[in-house]
Image (tube, rainbow, N blue to C red; front, side, top):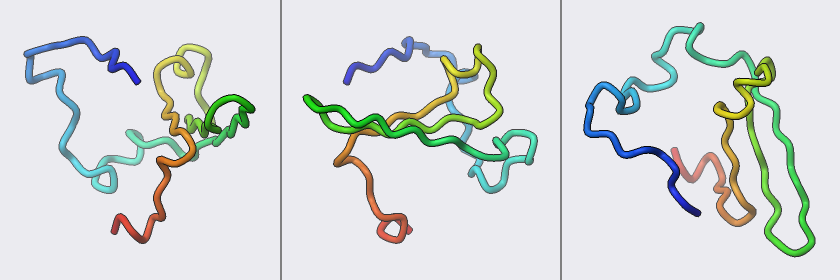
Length: 77
């Protein structure tokens, strides 16, 4: 996988360190949609995106994970 995030030395562009649970509800999506793509020649992939995402948001607000990279929630607590 290639990192396509532009390099930026400006600290104002760094991700927030505020835990998701502490963020205001307006900063969190109400729910997520999960789509699993089963591929014959490659690992399956699951993509999560905000349920209410518009066309513009869909190209920036998503997470995709390939089969084998998932972990049990309890193992990460």
